[in-house]
Amino acid sequence: MHELTLARSLIELVDDYATQQGARQVRRIHVRLGQLSAMTRALYFCFGSASRGTSCEGALLDIEEVPLTVNCSTCKAVKAPSGRYNFRCPDCGMPTPEVVTGREMQLTAIELGPLSSSETAPAAALSGDQRGEPDANAAL
Ligand SMILES: [Zn+2]
Image (tube, rainbow, N blue to C red; front, side):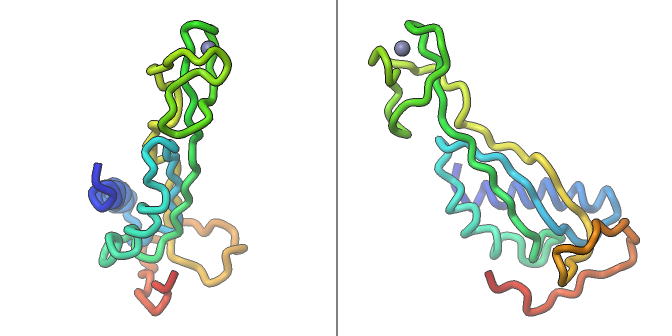
């Protein structure tokens, strides 16, 4: 999948959710992304421009990278291959095409609410009428 497509579909999903919840602003998005997708950097990169004009604009993108593991049918165990594209068991050297983790692309958490200047503020209850002011906060 193209990274911009990924960023957009992610934002669309979050935006829909925010609308359903009556929130105008998303504060934080947490995503689990498999190492195999190799999207982490690209997603960070695309997020800013792709989220412009949506409820996700200015939101913090939190990406948890999930390492690649494969199932070795010879050892009957889950292993972590030495390289991202090296689908061989590190112990017996047999090909291990069965990917266990590393392909994830999961939206795990969304924090709604206006962007606060102090990150230490307790999670504010959704008041619904606080409009997040689009400001010069877009610099990353
Ligand atoms: Zn093995």
